[in-house]
Image (tube, rainbow over the protein chains, first blue to last red):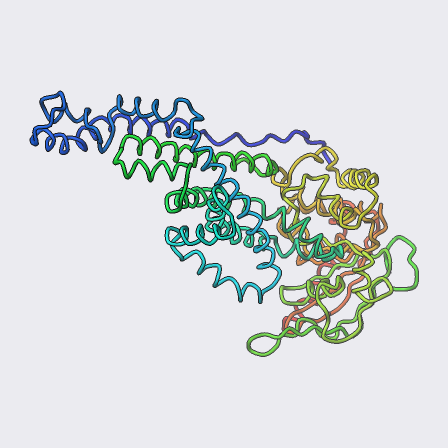
Length: 297
Length: 264
């Protein structure tokens, strides 16, 4: 046996996505100005024709001055961001409300994970459980969440569950499904040879589960958690919009949509998108931490 | 018996009129018919034959991974089930079947973890096994960082980790290239001599079977049965020179004739 070097080289990391992504961002930025002028000019022309005093003379010049633009001009974005972000933790500020929504989403995701893991274990353990419940689980996901949310909120309200928790429960309602399905697939993923191997060791069912099925399912778990996180975020925002809420991005969206404050809606939308990206990135970071054994993608 | 070591009189594996019938959509398949075989402790037995001859079936029966439909089978002085429950054999599969989330050392430790071996013993025992297969420098590597041959050596170390008297190997080198395979054959013979295990080795390579074995069990298909048993009288320890021995070719020819007989 020849002594080979013990430090096997890890393959070079895959080239970063950063440059291509920056390219797309640059293209979007270049397109933004003409698109904004084009989208707003119709409304500007109508306002001018109706004799409104916008402090400008041509439709093109007025396109950046509208009260409720389709796409806000840079200056409007800047004022909108400032007024909604300073001070960041005021009850009317977007960062504070994003934290509320983020908290609901994370709690919902935690509830969904517990439920998903239990369901996945039962689905994998018992064929009859799977045959009896899987159609109902699928059916539960076909109910439109917008229709379900107010009813759930009223129902939970009768038992004194109010505020933060109903939103988390509604988020969990749509997030548990991808986790249960992904995790069940993961628990079934071990190779037949690996199962035979455990059998030759006379491993107990609990050992097969803990030493083989659970670690084998981790990559599946994280993939489904990322899907579930975005679903849970949609769930908590929809829950905030469609039930009585005193905080959260959804409550802000509902208010500003009634007031037709398009600049505020844009700002809140961007906060929502950022929140989604942060949640998925958090899970991605956790995944890299937990599955260090995997080869670099 | 041509093994160069003394053996006791009681067979460690005893196969009597063993039969295995699988139900199939169109009726049934006789995977193994009236098999008879006695394996003595310390032997290196190869099961050779075309696909469908029941060689893997016979090995899986010995390992209690499937149950026979007829006949009698004793492993390590009891039923195969008892042998499995007593952890009397290590099994090496066609694929390494390593746990990709465990590094090399922890893969070798897997059976010790399952068997609740005292914690202090697990590391030293696993390191000893890795040294035996020449991989002590790779204990921190993960399976994907190793070549196919190295992965299979890890799986052999894992099978030996709990020191079972029997080693069952199901075409362990089938997926490897010729050069790697011949190197691993030499290494396996050294392991066999050093550890004194009884090895039952499934292969479809005639030269591999002759080179490794004390006896070669030739099997034929449809129905799967034992066509004959060839004693390999090549002296131990064997080396690459053994492959040049005129007797090597005689045994290979004998095996080939038996395989042909079953084919006609």
